[in-house]
Length: 119
Image (cartoon, rainbow, N blue to C red):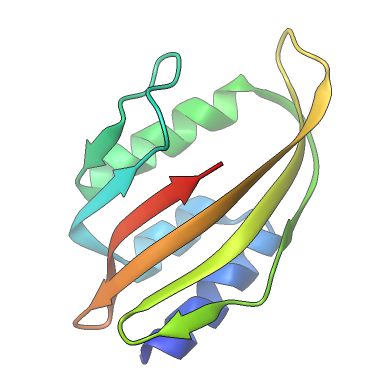
């Protein structure tokens, strides 16, 4: 798949909240995930697909209700792409809120090798 094809497919998975399916299909085994800051219970950097899958499961366990996600059209440049992701969520023990972030990805050999999030 081209970078453009991966970008479109990942954006669609995110729109339909199929994050784990996207990671299993589109991510390299040695992918790295970088958060904007150290979050409660999460490291700033997570290395390896299996650890990223576990991080996603841990996040989903913190979600009480999801009201949907919106994703912008991907912007592709070279081997990288970005889109905005807004999740409308009620986290356990918190009020309903919208979380927006800029998601930036790097692709090598047809797989995502890096994801980084910015608030």
